[in-house]
Image (cartoon, rainbow, N blue to C red; front, side, top):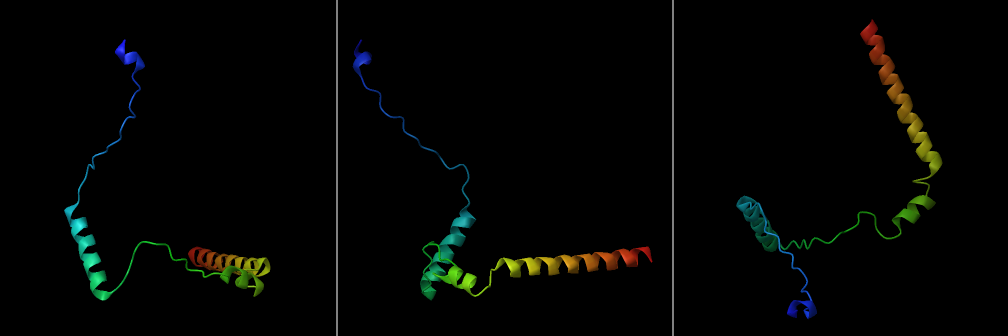
Length: 93
């Protein structure tokens, strides 16, 4: 009867790592030490390749316009067709 009024405790979750790679830990420690000596800070934060406003600027300059992309796609297609035709020609000759 005493268990009836007792509130259950939340179950805890604990996982043991299955694999341990000492060489990997040594490499990471060495890399951190070298970065510290060289003054390189790599805190793992994401640094975007495209800066703020670059996409909008690229669109306004026509760098990513649909017409230009279509032209590039057609050019690639024609080059691939020409290479394929040349290969077929040399194989059948």
